[in-house]
Image 1 (tube, rainbow, N blue to C red):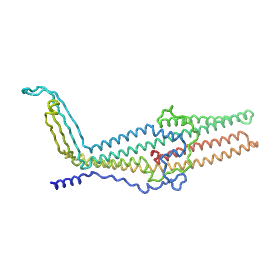
Image 2 (cartoon, rainbow, N blue to C red):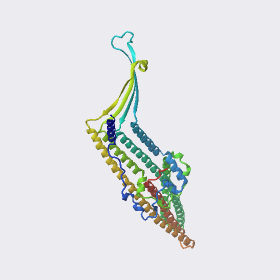
Image 3 (cartoon, helix red, strand yellow):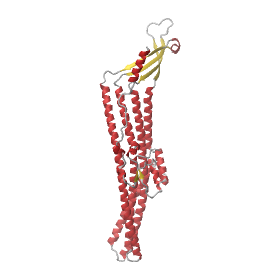
Length: 465
């Protein structure tokens, strides 16, 4: 007898293996893990690992507070966190299948007995039934374990999705703040240009009155002045729009945005090299890559779930109960009834089950392709952001040279005007040219700030805290 039991137990151990393939993470290729193409030989980035709280590199306490508020109160983050909580609850539900399922039932019916009554017997009475049922599924072929594995993968994907939302919200918050302050700086430059043109127009009108200029000169300067003045409302609308967007990102109404969010008037600048790491660290850090990898793991586990349906499902169950006329008979006079034994379910026509296996394998192939595509997209976005940042810096360097040359010309013109070699109108024109060059440089600074945000967002940091 003992020998037979040992043989049976060994058979159960051999059979109790999870169906379907075991998930093995796909290794990252050498080319994907290598340093970035646009970072090689570059002095504007470094190969050290990027900081999680990258926005602190700007050393702006107001920005730090706004990002903190966005991480705590943004509505999109709240939605992502709720979805993560739902995925974790689903995992707990799947894990509960490993526990015995206990159910308690009871019923009471009032009715009339058929036939003539026996002496002392009531024609009508209450029939009461109570029972306790226990069932436990023996996971011989890993159906439950694979379902738990799939749910665990979905939890990891939901967790990564929440991190991806945090990355996007942090980036959008910094971008909105950068847009607001750069618009304020460009407004100040535009107002300076308008003031210079007002002075130039006033001087030209005086020259026209004494016959040293004509009406065409006056009309041209007035036209240019009005064109530059018309740009200020557009810049002001951009600034207000950025502030309203900043309020929404931080979970506030526009009226609730703190006043200090609108106080800075100089564009965000970061002169130090940006740490970017390499491809291997990027793919391990990017939330969308982690989410795609976890969904691939979940899809692989569902192949095992579908495969397990090809085999018998064995449930050990038992019940105990009693019935009688009235509660007194149930819990006192009548004896208990009980049953115990296994229940085997096995679908003979397995065409549908085999079709589900094929479906699960196809879903896994799609998840693998999605993962590969996400890896390629992550590398593409990072390289593109690096290239755009480098080109934006090169453009600013060229515009800075133009601004410096315009300022030098303005200084020479002032000196010549003091000596009486040239007129005041020529001086104002030189100053206006310098101011225009300053406006172009301010626009380039705003573009660089946006390029930095794009690069930090592509690097995938900002969620670690």
